[in-house]
Length: 165
Ligand SMILES: [Fe+2]
Ligand SMILES: [Fe+2]
Image (tube, rainbow, N blue to C red; front, side, top):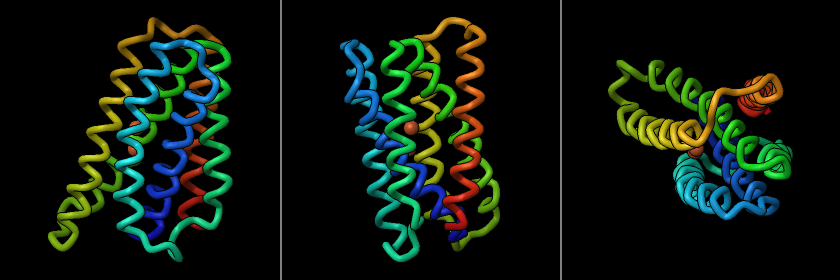
């Protein structure tokens, strides 16, 4: 479970930065409020992961995940509200699947009941984040779909690397 937890910790580190990046560059008060609200949840997730994973077990690439996260939030913030919501939709859709896989892995392992409950709590919050973003969006155009695909691929690559390094 250690590689998985390392990727979770890295992911929540990146998630905090995504919302910080949005807040740093957005000029839209509604986007700002949206990001502040989500940031609060991600900080709580990161606190949980910090408690779970001792410092020496964490990804050695944390500075990379911080920068990657910040850019993933800040860049769409330059393009406006729809780009931000599209990004959050893509990221949180990925995280939902990511946590679901781990929860399934722990399904019948009684000794990991507490960990499973924690991952389930995180997953429920991420779904809420995704739905919050989706509710503010219409149908995606070509650029929106391409960007969402890129964000999804970047997230997969991040998990692959963070679970190993
Ligand atoms: Fe999170
Ligand atoms: Fe989230």
